[in-house]
Length: 277
Image 1 (tube, one colour):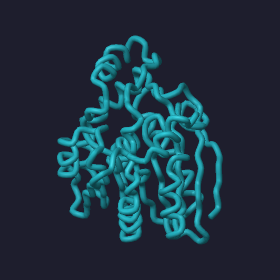
Image 2: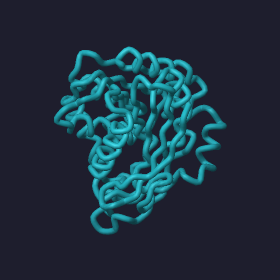
Image 3: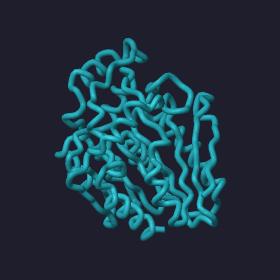
Image 4: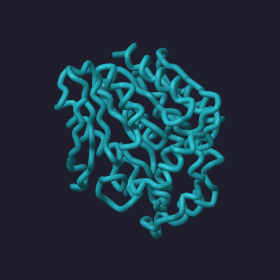
């Protein structure tokens, strides 16, 4: 495995961090899109699953996240994430010309991935995987934060608010939760603008799903409270392709790849990508 780190220029000339892990003679390119408040370095389980299968795995840190520049957990518009991803995808494709491309989006990253693919004139991807996803906020997201973000976004958009989310929502694995809490690159606050933009993008998940033209898999922990359970089936039903799969995992919370029972989700991910490569 070859590991690479680097930076590229996102929109508004913002320096963004990325890293990649590449198998010898890779057979496919997988782009990982991380969630709110976290970063690309938290996907080692995905890397360790896919690189031995012969893939190059590329992941960026969103603006205001991880090792990328920008105000922490802030974005002018949600579409800024999509524009950054477009630049990043081009860079990854240039490094691996002719390889089939797969996208994995987790949590907020699933919003980015879904909206991004739906916006492409040519959806030149072999598969899309949406992990920890949905189309409406779940019980883990405090209503007060949602309300405050809507009220404050236009007035003080860069104001940081406590996320109010219990870190234990990500996994039953205490080591994973402890590492998440102590990780200096993980943020536990959110700006009014980013929170507002995420909430505004949620209803559009249904419309975006209706524009998908590529094989799509959803992976959800049955105990995931970040998105409302009622929205899972609505989102899956809206996906406008026949080749789609919805995997629900008992005993799993938000991060199915980082759960105690992560063997099945990771195997499902590996098999899904292999079948569509």
